Length: 299
Image 1 (cartoon, rainbow, N blue to C red):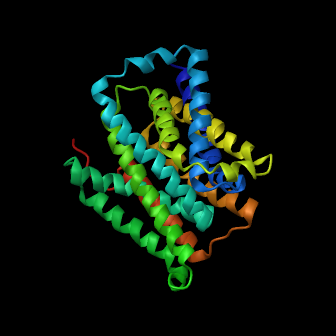
Image 2 (cartoon, one colour):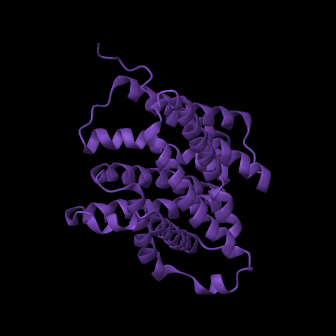
Image 3 (cartoon, rainbow, N blue to C red):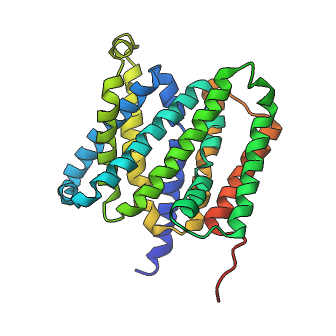
C-alpha cells in the first residue's frame, strides 16, 4: 500500500493538471456559443446540474443532498449567488476583452481571498502576504499599462477589465462563504449552486437568441455544463485531498496559461512582452501566497 502512494499522487497531479488546462477553454466555449451572457450562465447551470445529478444517482451519492442541515441553507444560497454571478461577470469579460487577458485578471481572486479573510474573518495578514499583494498589483499594472491610453476611447475594453475584476471579487466571496459549508459534499454544493443559478437567471433568458442560434451553438453550452462544470469539477475535487498545497498551487497556474493558449489558437489573441511579464508576476505572486513563500515557520 505504501509503494502505491507515489503512483496515486502522480495520477492525481496529472488529473488536476489536465482539468486546469481544459478549464482554460471555458472562455472559448462561451464565446463560440454566440449566446448572451445570461443565457450562457443559465445553460451552464442547467446542464451542469443535470450531469452532476445523474452522476450522483449512478454512483449512489444523491441521498446525501437531502441531509444538509437547514441552518446552512442561507449560507449555501449566498455562496451560490456569489458563484453564479461570478460566472456572469467572467463570461461578460470574455465577450469584451481577450480570453487570456480576462482570465489572468480573474486570478486576482487569490489576493482578494487573503484581504477579505483579514477584514471579515479576522485572519492575520502577514507581512509576506502583504508583500505578495503589492507584487500582484504591480503585475496587474504591467498587464493593463500598454492599453491604459485606450480607457477613454475604448469603453468596452475598460468594461471588460472591470468585469474580470468583479468576477474575481465574487469568486473570492463564494470561496470564503463556502468555508462554512465544509460539512456539505462539494458535488452536492455544486448541484445546489447550479440549480440556484437556473432559478436566478431564468427570468433573464433570451428565448429569441436561443431560437435563432445555429444548431451547433447549443453544443458549446452543453460542453460548459457537462465538461467544465461536471467532469472537471469531479476531477478537481477528487484530486484536491490527495495533493499538497504546493502542487495544487502550481496546477492552478496552468489555467491562465491554457486560457492564453486557447485564445491564441482559436481567435488569434496575443499579449505583448510587458503584459506577459505582468501575467507571470501575478502568477508568481499567487504561488507565493498559496505556498507560503516568505512566511516564518514556527519551530
